[in-house]
Image (cartoon, rainbow, N blue to C red; front, side, top):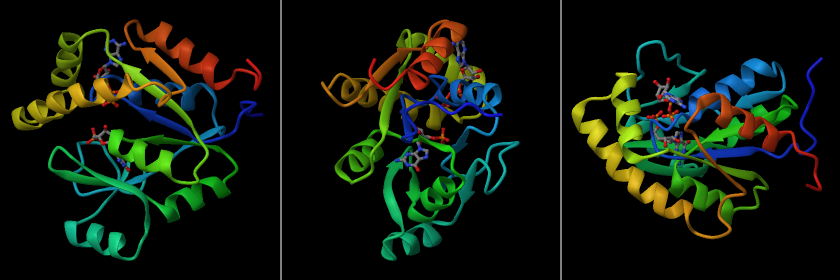
Length: 195
Ligand code: ADP
Ligand code: 5GP
């Protein structure tokens, strides 16, 4: 049987592209099956090899994305690296109905919008051990063009600066050693309410 964390609020996980957010929360999902679910975002970017529509993202055209904005269908949305990304109200409703702890993987403009909404969440920031390590992870993943790597590294500076704003994140984890970072994530997610 799945053991739920004491605090069942959604987890908003952010951090520079390539820092290891997906690696960390996918391990959380694998170690605690049926406990968590990903908030499947909408995006206008193209799928990477192996990414499935409706599972990793809802892959939509710019027109479809803008139609959803006009229908007030997003909890938050932002531009990143020349593409648009957003969390739809429908996704949040669907995932919350499953009774699981919802995990959002979003960038900093989305974090700001969620923080200004009525949405009650826990905010976790994943930081790289260094910018060099971040770059080599991003390149090592082999998913990005040179232009996309450059945009993501530029944006990484803004993400890191934002993470230093006091009171924005409840927990900052440096993803240096993966096992250590994962343990910190799991301990935080499962900690009792009052600690
Ligand atoms: P994000 O979801 O933040 O964009 P990913 O989870 O896709 O990042 O990780 C980017 C790359 O870095 C992947 O190839 C992943 O295997 C690798 N990676 C993740 N964590 C670590 C770590 N602690 N040490 C070295 N490589 C890592
Ligand atoms: P990627 O293209 O690597 O999947 O994601 C790029 C960036 O977009 C990451 O920082 C990721 O957290 C962010 N992102 C993914 N989905 C959303 C979303 O729904 N809203 C916002 N604001 N950012 C998102």
